[in-house]
Image 1 (tube, rainbow, N blue to C red):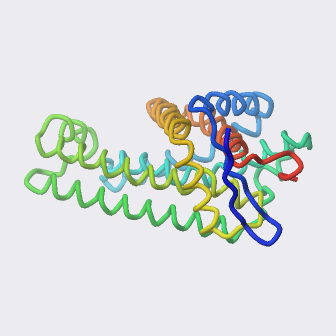
Image 2 (image 1 turned 90 degrees about the horizontal axis):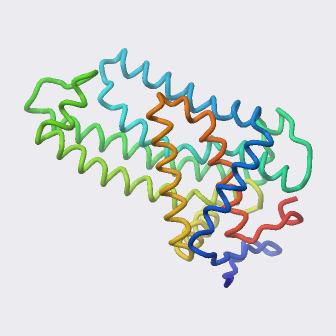
Length: 266
């Protein structure tokens, strides 16, 4: 295990730890323990993305634009780290052995709120780029055909040459943008929530932490993608459990990568 130190300020430093490629299993295990211990709060947090997803689906249905639902689902990966701040706080309080309250969950302690907002803004920009590209891809692919919305969208996407090209390009582009969002946010948001740090430094720390732990972080991202995909297949209901579980696991990921201790987190 090796460490790489980055200065956050005059008296603030963070050490980026190099971990074993299978370290993500421990994060998921600790996240599950946190969820089981605080499942009432976790399910309340998990209900938020479920309701948002249902509302977005209804809006798209009413606007006869249900074909854009896959792009909306892809965007979930970008905004998820922001919605999970309550989970980070629950895990932090459990590490410290402090009581957990509803106020702490929905009004979590954030040391650098302005910097968290900047990271969130960067993620929203990436999401807007993805939404625009998805719209362009669909418009281009369906330009020679009748609009393929509602139940016809799957037939168009999977049974026509234009649809298959759209799905292939969309998957590659969406995956690339989701990867960028993951790399810059997986450590930066919990770091800015727990330490006095500017957004650019926090995102730099996140990029370096991921680059020094490619195996563990790639495996963690794969597990996140699979669990979220399974949740989406349940009509988003699975997110009630999966979302807080992954939020807790992400906090333990941050804690392991930065060598964050109980005393430091306090």
